[in-house]
Image (cartoon, rainbow, N blue to C red; front, top):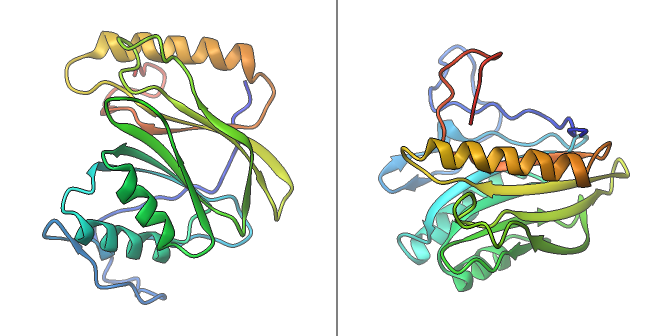
Length: 212
């Protein structure tokens, strides 16, 4: 199993008063939370990916679509993995508002996963597909898999978007991760791969003793 090393986007909502912002940030307030300090911008020469749980998108209708669109335009990422798409129509409207972007989502009946990608940087190879559709205990939201070619570096990689069960369902998450690892070892050994999504787990133990 080979993991693709991409640019690492470290984002904090705490502002550093000693480091002035070099790029003007949009005036964005979503669900009464001012989000400017939580945003960062991409780097042109690298493959930039980010994961984002939009929480039953769009919670506040067109207002949510507009504000999320502002954030995505500002961040200017190559690939965004989305969790909790409640309305596919709203997702399509969001993608239409992003210049030169395309979107794809899964077919899960409960709530969907999706990808939004910048066609100036990425080309999707083939079609996206869902895996573990017959394993609702471990994966109540079937992971979404898509393969992309980065046009500037000619690197091909596969992205897997996951959204594991929340709350106190640790055995279910643990079983899901074991199943996913076996699947990746069998099907993607030696290939460029990035696993994105909402693991629904706070990592509080040591690096050498971490279980999802």
